[in-house]
Image 1 (cartoon, rainbow, N blue to C red):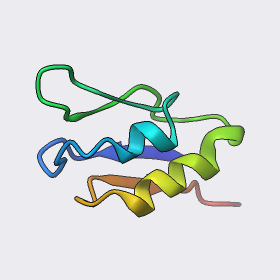
Image 2 (tube, rainbow, N blue to C red):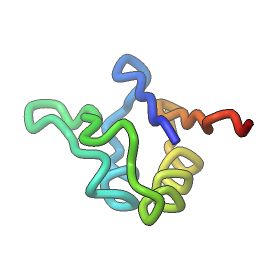
Image 3 (cartoon, one colour):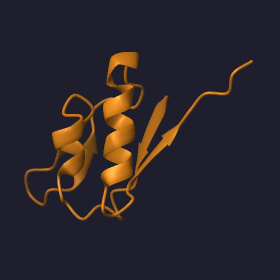
Length: 68
C-alpha cells in the first residue's frame, strides 16, 4: 500500500489523524494533513483505508501494489 495526500484539498478536519495517528498528523499552524508514513505496515492498512474513506475533502488516496 502506498498513501498519497493532497494538501491543497485538505480542509483540516483531522479525521485521518483520529483514524490512523501513526500515518497522519496535522500541521500546527493550519491543521493541514501531514503524511508520516507513505507505506504503512499491514496492521495499519485498514485504518488508512478508513481514513481515506471518511476524509471530507477526499485529500487521501491509497494505491495498492499490483499482484504478480
